[in-house]
Image (cartoon, rainbow, N blue to C red; front, top):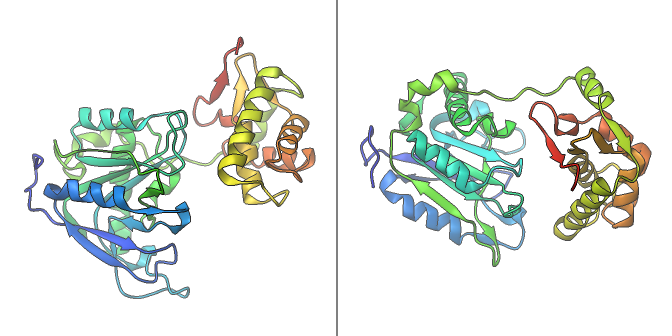
Length: 321
């Protein structure tokens, strides 16, 4: 069903990349009438691992490669036809996000990512414009960020920082035997026509300053063996090991993300798992055999959003959990 406020024949360019290197691109020009075809393309694309999936963007790029041979960079942007938003905080379901956008009257498509589960939802949003916009890279970036901020305001400020990057592209498709769940709506007016959303727009979230991180950490008490925290941390570590495999480096990327995931949880009575407690759990489960309490201590101090309690309300366990 065509949406109100723009002709159904409005053509939007979807730029496709076969991998992260983005050394080659293909532009598929689609119209809102072709939403079922777009959804089918996303659903049918499958790979054995997320890194093998292709990527796309609603930004069109020129033909000049950078020093790495990549076409996907800000200064090479020549037009934008919509926005892509990423959500990975694992609290708001794809159905709830869809409901909010439908209620706001924004045409869109949402699909969940390969790592998404019912308990820990992750998804990506496409919202196209009424027409493509051309301009300088700076002009395109300014418009792009405003449109993402409009969508972010509708969703409650939950979109990831990467959503505001003009040249950002995202994987689409699913893993073998796990096709993505997709929801869409063609009703309403495209987000570029909705100036009324500016009042509630929410821009790119700021990173916490190190001194603020230290203040937040100091406000919480730590426990080596609180059963609520140990049980939850053990579950997180086991699930992490099952999905992603063990962290082989004590301070590698997998170890950092696992530790930060555990540190994002506290109890309602003000406890978080201590450095020693985190290290013991991730070593005993085999998720990060070589990450010591000293490593965890350093990771805690460097946490961008420490303990999950800034800038959001954070994750808490009920006292009786």
